[in-house]
Length: 89
Image: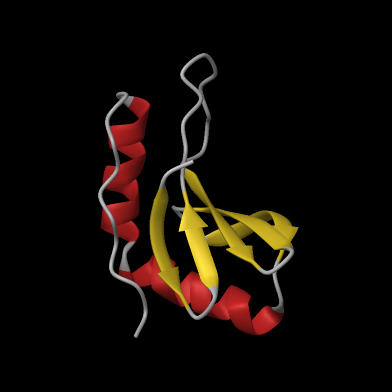
């Protein structure tokens, strides 16, 4: 699963399964032993969980980079490699 960004101990990844179409553009956030899945439009938690502070950081990051996330989703769906996205600083 390609890594898009990493900040404050949070790793953001996105992937595509070529044999199965995802219906909603989304990404995965990893923090320690926690895993959460967020939709891109709107940015919201759709599965899993991370601590509340990290969830707010992920949501803020995703709002700032929504267009890049959509672009990366489209690249992955067409079999191409996604571009890295700037972390929060």
